Length: 258
Image (tube, rainbow, N blue to C red; front, side):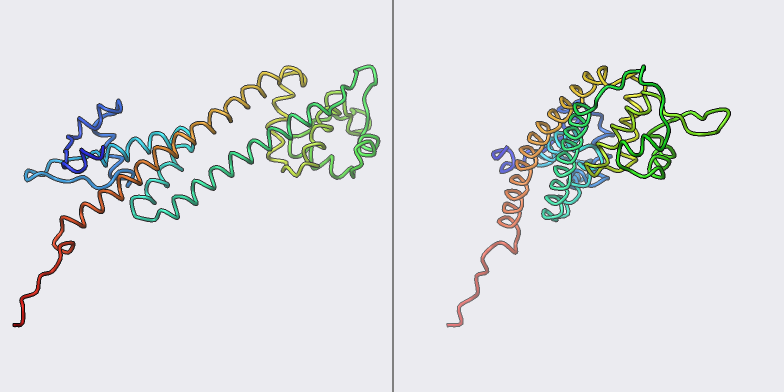
């Protein structure tokens, strides 16, 4: 890459596109979005790219895998407008989100481990006994119901809420996660998964998959960081070459006054 940059090696759009299994239109779109630096033009107006553009495209595609398309786009846009600190901040935010996701998974796993199975023969219960068991107010259980965390049925004669063993299980899980500081909208999807699976045990494979996805994302972020670092080095080298070759970069020789 260093030798090519120094020699001013030029790439056609098709050359750059084929190297990454993309269409030339995709490459043009990436340039228009600020993901790639602006292309040079021939005397006939055709785009020409350099290994610097190839490095940018390689960095972007590597970042997409770990950070997602939108975040990778924002990172590359920041780098290409020479706002490296902004790009690093975005990367930090993405890593913080991954850490938060890991903590959420750990909390879910801990909550599921702590759940005590409620045998059906224990029968149904009502809002008062269940709220006392959890140490919360009945109004909190009703709020959880509105959020979809529990789905008690109504007694047709009295209209009272009736919580089955499955409802109690859902309430216990919600209580564990709320104590961990998680919001109702974060808890609701998990409760839905537990409910659809018919219990906690079938969720083990889902948790394994979740853990594997987080690990893959972490590894992808490492690869993206390496590719971005290589692109930053290429930009620095290209900038130095421009400075050396431009008139402003040449030493000024003033005529002797003598």
